[in-house]
Image (cartoon, rainbow, N blue to C red; front, side):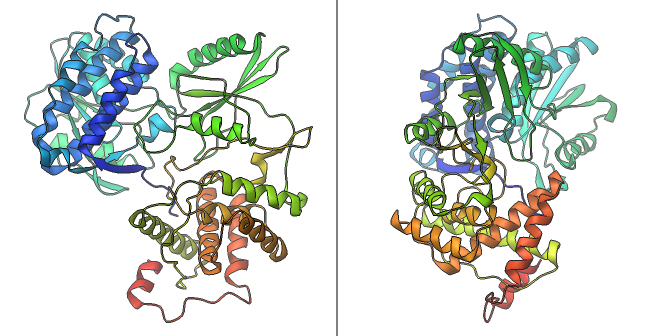
Length: 531
């Protein structure tokens, strides 16, 4: 099943550097949160330059910047704030771009561990500290970061080992090839006694880290002298206990009542870590991980929540700390498909239109449709054995979707009758295949998740038209199939009964009397859809 994607954006190098400079200008060197965010963005800049084959002359500059910020971050983490950001300021000042380099378009990856999975770089400080106590202080250590997230993480490991008196050198590499059979093109220009490979985690197969280890062996490294540094599979790892205490203290300060318990909410695939802090007498706060401040073109989640709270769709956030945003717990009853009536459909239509984003550029929309096209065909073929070609819409003008999670369980009817959304922000920044799409992604999601009848679909589309949202029937058919195929694929990773529900919905849709396969399919396209 195809469900995973890769969050990225393209921008000129001049604009990417300007983003990092703006972050630097607003960074408080005494705030670990601030320095962490600067470190992550410096790492993204280094990744973008390293992935561009014609910007090799700038690699030393960006590596110096990332390393200088990592030095400051590690010093602050261990309680030594004397390092400061002077070296980083000097590194930024040394950036000199000619016109060709400044105008070059680069691809910036959004490291999902920092933006989505609550991977604390602090974990790597502790791991490096323990490692340094085990091995010879005279060892020369080569540190290899696997791009993308390994760029900043490798700098943290290098800074931590340097602080412990080790002789280190650092480089980063980009794994290539198929996800389950990665390859690493590795060129080593330094001598070392030991090597450390740094990445977010082993992933589904561990092939990237194993490929890096194999490349090191080809360069003469003893397998016993290669170590793998990867993050915890359970969010903050050993930072978790401290995090619980810190969020409890923040909750008590915000609400003015002692916290009686901190609960980690169940986490489904492609969902952010959430902690529930219950106070003795002043209610409950939900702390949701919203990211450490990665460089991105999307509006930050906290700002989205603030905007939608002003529109009346959710509770306003109260605080942000360590990448987590606090929102008052919404008391009430979750909605269900059997509660659907014209009034509810009207509210769903109004929400869909009010939170919609700007239209996607034509080229981006074409890529977005192509992602869905490949995923839909592959997932339906694997689950149902149906290789029929499907209608694929042309890219059209219109807004982009603003939510992506329209399930009834995320809608709460409060005691005063209001309909509120528990996660009212655009879910475009996870590592799922969908990414940014047309507003029809939310329209289709509502139809599928609420299991709307033909009459209810008509009423919902009529309500959307009252908000100037038009849904082309053929395009909507495609997005419904794509949405259900995606959710079916996702459900296979989490188990339970959801997978069967989406599978049955697709079967019914594909075998409905009114459904027709694409007429006169292009044989090349048909083979591609069926692979």
